[in-house]
Length: 437
Image (cartoon, rainbow, N blue to C red; front, side, top):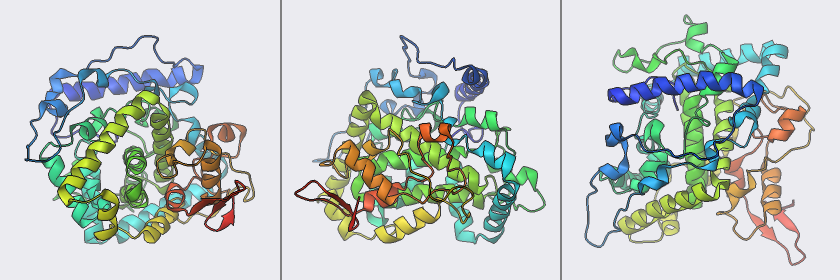
């Protein structure tokens, strides 16, 4: 989110975008001083001047016997405790602070990061480039349309139709209104982190090595308003969105997460982000999703959006979602989705740190498995995450005290965790994929 100026949006949102940047610049010194905190009383009103972006203003297509779309009221646009992150300074800098060590102590990794994006960018085929261009433009709005193929051909088509008919207003409000998506926000935008790290983009650093895949000669996809590279905002947005969708629709979790990872990979196809940016964007996005799901008020409205999607798809298919997922063709098989997602957690980097370091499961992470494994306790879900996590030592696996305090989001493999076979014995022993956990 917020990687580039928004196209096709009226003047008021442009001003809002400029205001956001001013707020970001104000937050940077506040972060260093530890001054960022949630306001005691915050009354946030929806920006009426951009009503066309508010789902409640769009008239849905009604169908006999179908669920009746009911948008959220104005009160649901108000303050949520998770509008400020649970990390130092109210943003997600701590989650990716390990980038500093790579810049200072691992020039070989930084050079390899550029080499990887050059290879991906230069060797992308026409189909991959076209998908990357769609993903690049989807941060403004219609993100769920771009990501809908994660649902598979049949269900994805139903989802696109429902969105086009304005039949998912709760979902639109929370997840699919561009930079106004209520489950997003400034704290999870990566704007602050970009300002702090100040790392230039690949096509700026190596313009002779990066091919600009312009859309019909339109250079707008590369007009990024001077924003920096690390972490990737588009990847962050795709990550928190697909992570929350995975929690709401666990039947499709590995596929949704793999599609979010593809969106990150596509930023390398465009030559606007390094693999380290993409890894960092996944980490901040999932940390933000964890904060949102652990916020009782936000969790309540998210559950309503999940039920909205579920009921709409079940009405359109005439069967429970689990049956439809099993019957229709998938974006990826679960096995392929987990494998692809896992590969894109490291993008081919070798470990650079201790390969035998203990894992600190982030405090917010186990709750993300609550819908997939409702019978498990927080501790048991944490053990599932530990059993399916990456080994230690890969770039951005921060093994400092700060990194351990933030939790090792770099290692948390949500796709593998959602897909895990978990059982609890009569004696309470937990088994994950056939192994004691």
